[in-house]
Length: 304
Image (tube, rainbow, N blue to C red; front, side, top):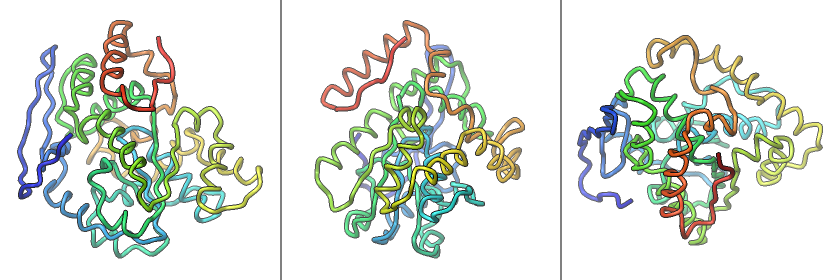
């Protein structure tokens, strides 16, 4: 994806699906935001103005890849604690929090972003803060994103799962193409920037949380025993987080979200996408994946 370097201008785009559905995004310099995001032009400016610190940890992922989950784990590890944070991850997302608010936070900061690597502020590379990149099977991402759009009160998507899959495969969703996003990070890693980067696979974290959390701990410079990492894994179990964070997020229900629950901890399953994809849809997805990711080292984990 090529981002426009011209003056920031918001341009609304409406895409049509094969079954009559529609999705609307706000386009700023080639980067798509959900239509309800306030002042997307300023959001891009704040990303550009973000001033990284050498002791920052920036967790990076495409939406619906496990960012809330990994942020909970990392904040717990950095505090060397066994209990979950009393804050919501959204306050750490540099995409939607002003540069001044981020700058006012005390160090060390554990921050998050959905931006592709080419949009990283220069300060991130200059000061070499640690990066954690989350990867998840894009079919699971597509289903979770579809459900997210259904929960967002002002997401401006109407249509069927088939419509949404059509949009997802073409990058016609907020935060653009999953394929381009992942390829941007692979390019960043190959370029050998000053940052140290740790890659977390959602499916591995789900399958073997204690060992994967221990790897993150080692990356962050911790030296803890198995019992500690097991305690962190238990505290950040999806059901525990769903219960605890759901209560913290209750004030956002009604204002931002449809339904009765805080939607950021839905199921936390690796293969739930199989309940949505038809055999033909999976065939189409795999075909697009092979074409888009032919030079990538990332592979699909399983098939129907």
